[in-house]
Image 1 (cartoon, protein in one colour):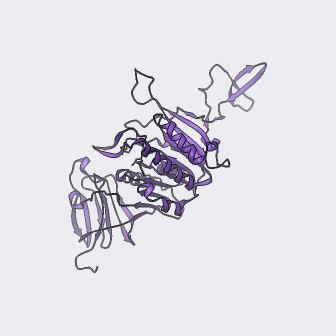
Image 2: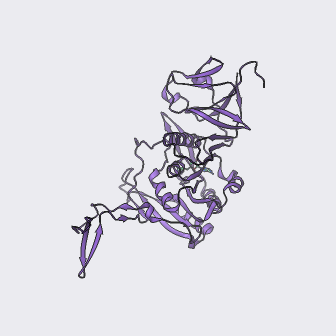
Image 3: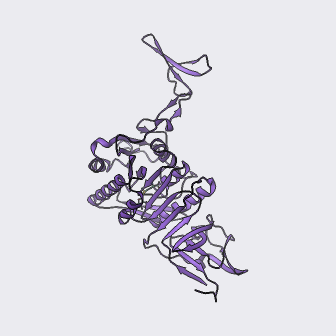
Length: 399
Ligand SMILES: C[S@@+](CC[C@H](N)C(=O)[O-])C[C@H]1O[C@@H](n2cnc3c(N)ncnc32)[C@H](O)[C@@H]1O
């Protein structure tokens, strides 16, 4: 009745445009270039920082999301390959960002200079945060580095898109006043001249970003992916360097922060990651986001393309009581501990090995159910990020 089938792609039809690809970007370079060469206004890369550790995904129980322990030469070759591909993917007026930490940043910058050229370097953004412990044997390490390079001097950049209201708390030692139009200002007199700073004027970020904190443990944005970055960080880069409708690409997508920020800002996105866990988290995050915001209004679909990355297989019988009702199959969640529940389930149709999702079970709870009609398919991702597509063919039916 339930037949496991293979699919090589997915469509989630919100009417919007975005692609999540589960693959090592080096294995799909030609495909990426054939589809998106010169198309991206922004490429953001947040690779592993070569810390020598592995990083977990935490959802009830822990599992390894990815390992970050390559020999230095191999690691730098990875950065070089990613930078070269990014250069090809960027439009002539596009901007590139590499997010890295000070342990390896000096070596990465040399790689970027080699690919983009020293003259293409624009900023070393310091992302400074307070979270984490305090050191006593050295100064506490409280910042990451984001290198910004332009594909050409004509790169798009709009600082006004990331301005914030000056407000009242930037007045320092200045005198408060109100002008003829009722605008509040703070003034200072130097050499007989008065300088006025209006409360409702915009101020623009410098290359030190100390106003965006790391996500706290209980932050609603948290997905459980340990190296997840705040959307606010991505939004600042995307807003300043692209316009609605532009394409944003991330080759180390992780939990999908870039894609989520791009979607929210009405940019399209391509998010690539080789980890099964990263891709599953990204898919669910985007589906939840898009369903909630219904923000896509263009015509092309968001698609998820799964490349075989050796994930184990999911088994529907382990999670669902399956009953037949009026010719359809009803999958009802069994009573299981929260961390043993499947991660995601969707029902849809399959054509030419592409699954098109029609309905979702996203925050699965005991007793919840989803119905699969004859000819429809259940797509299941289990608690270990094993996946499977299961086609429902009633006994006696053709094929
Ligand atoms: C630091 S995390 C990215 C976190 C992401 N910015 C976020 O906010 O969730 C780095 C990611 O790069 C992925 N990765 C490492 N090497 C890769 C490769 N060659 N191709 C694609 N993804 C890779 C890892 O699986 C990991 O998910």
